[in-house]
Image (cartoon, rainbow, N blue to C red; front, side, top):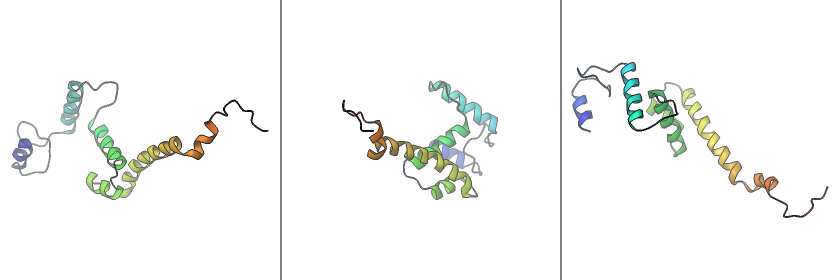
Length: 118
């Protein structure tokens, strides 16, 4: 919070700044994310600012956020990009449905030793 208050005094809306108070470039932000990921022990996955943004978007939708709200939060001009995140979240819903649906699980139940009619 103290950082955001101090950063707010700089007269621009960039969250990440360098030691001179100038907006940090994309390579600097990438290095910060990678370094913090290593410090947190995150290994075996791609870690970048885009990965964090993507993870946020899908998690937002999985937790009940609306696609129109997501569009605004992410700053997308069109709904098309936000819809791509929604499609990824929908895959979770489909998988959960297949796992929980009584009708979908009928064929996977055992017959209990009885012979099936042909």
